[in-house]
Length: 281
Image (cartoon, rainbow, N blue to C red; front, side):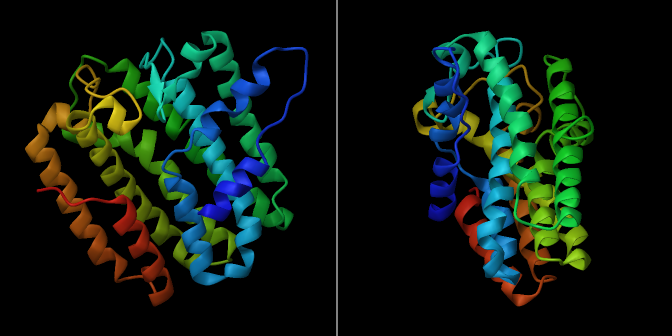
């Protein structure tokens, strides 16, 4: 992941113009860091099967991180969550202005596909990768989830509907990261199993994020916390104890499902789970 971080910094978007702040704004949230969970998932799959492809895979991992970062910038806008803090830094509409934040989000969205289209793989592989990123990050994926999330503010949903919301908003891009790793290394047979595993992993990741929202300060989280009262979060609907229980159940299921993968992949994914997933007591 250190090599990925350096790759990201070496390939930050560049747009030289008469605009006084656009270039700075383009890079602000990318340079601010983050968990890099989605790139880590993709690179772990590639490393499990063919480490020689890691250099090329970093282009794809970066494309996913670009799309994810755009979604955070838009999620923080006054029209949505109106959040002042992200990755420990003032959000773009606070640091610059709302128009700049909207346009930077748009730019990173489209730039993600430019980066992906230039990844050093065959046209056949690139088309598959573009399709996965677009379908899981777009109208029937992340954007749909955000639309449901915003529309149903202050309108409590049933647990199954909340799962649908977060499968789209969060889990599908996480699942796509795993599947895109499989596409890079030509492991089509395992790609769907990885995607299904990723959906469940994405739900767990979201529940943990909801738990952190009520158990961490904004300083600890690097973003505004205790801000989900009007949202259909797992903690808001289930309460903290039941949300923790739900997270532990999912973690147990994922641990069992790991056994269905071959040894190299199991080792790589186990490292990811240990790093990013916590047990709750």
